Image 1 (cartoon, helix red, strand yellow):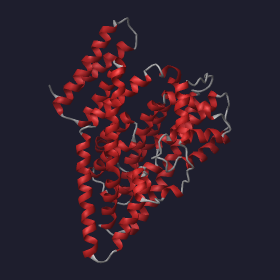
Image 2: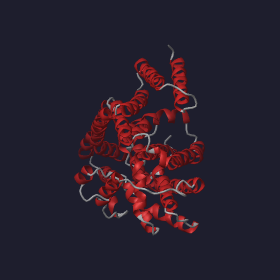
Image 3: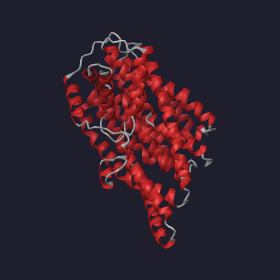
Length: 447
């Protein structure tokens, strides 16, 4: 069967499954289950026939949802697959960033361009994340998802919140940019600190005039870079299983019923994210003459990984490789993409503004426009440079709610659907950083 015909069959099956599960008709449960499995088998046949990694990731995501829903006791232990994949990804990030940045800076010796790219990137990041904040505000004020809601936090979510709050540390936005120990930055997965060290190392290497001393270090960095990209390709073969395990665990752990009480909040977030992509990313793409088809093909795998694992780290190595394959120079990719992971979290900042007002609405407090604008200024500062902190979004949300004089415990209820919302905001973070890489490359006349 041709690829196009098989895709049409799969789309028709998906539509049929959606119709019968909408309970518009009296359908036997056995028939519903059978239709789901026919759809999943057709998806698996597509992957087997055309050997597409992106398709394999999406199909395993569907299988994971089904497994977690039908066999929750079997689905929960599969989180181990996701954890193994994320651990392997973390081993790649530091050497990959170090080698690509050093080669990008030292091999060209254009130090002025590094400073120029840094200023342009920070300006772009600030403008786009500010737009994300205000779109989040507009979305929650229109939907009023928290108005009239009875805030009842379950014990399990209170315990999870207390665990996250117990690890809260003081966060100095400026100081935390600079590493005190490179090994410590690697062990704590502080992406921005790794980037800063690598940039300084690359500049130092570029300043060495003696080629006999400079060349061996540069050759080592070039070799390390190539090895880490090959390492990434090997690990990516494990990605579908990791995605399936992550989805099976999430569905088995949360269940699908958790959406009933907070459905409007989740829907508001996803609609706001789609609107943000349509009103901000698409116009920016047209302005810089982005080759949309080529760009979508390049980001499909990283975004699929980010959505299924709710981890930007999982997508970083593949995003770097695909952006470079798209024609963007390595020196731009290696500088802009990792830096964006700390300064250009579009999906996260949109979520934070939306969730903060949601908590106020749930508490029965109507925030004034001036209070909401003040909250945006707070979030502009507090949401920077914390990408490597576990539970960072929740900690920032708690701090913001407290600054507005609200009871932070009212935010605990959001943890019930936080994993589901994290998938959406992480995906938009990855899309935003890939787009930023192309924008800065275009700004520098590198593409």
